[in-house]
Length: 223
Image (cartoon, rainbow, N blue to C red; front, side, top):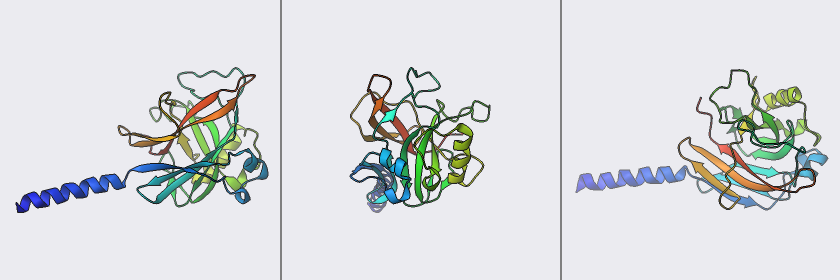
């Protein structure tokens, strides 16, 4: 009886500990802080965002996306390039209330960062790190003053400042999930990823499609 009681307590402690590691999503009914963004960038952001928690109350990050994503005409998805964004395009904003980390496990200081679309280089140094080449690169908000796309070299240099290393700070954009209601937070248990799944208004030529997006907000590359 004594051993059974302790076994039950240990099992309960394990379950409680596992549950405490879960993440959850709340809609954030406020825009990103305008006083920390360039006026043009602030004006481009939607008036509401998403807040990710770990457990009941530990804030992980806040994410906002643009009111509308303007997409290059004729851009088509491929096996390796899933999203129809232009390289360097402004996609959103992220805020870390405390130290965070990117998809490489690099530490990100607390603060506000813009999120710009970038493609993983095909140079032999990133083999096996992701299923496709699509990423959002973090740029310190104070250094990002316009909404126009950033040239790749400039984007990479600014993003390195977000990580404080020689590698840009990045969050992975896996292939979006076509089914189910959004927004939602989804757990990929096989890779220990937590994905923010959203849909947003886009504009591409004469059409105005709804574009789905999946962003790894918690989790790292396996290699």
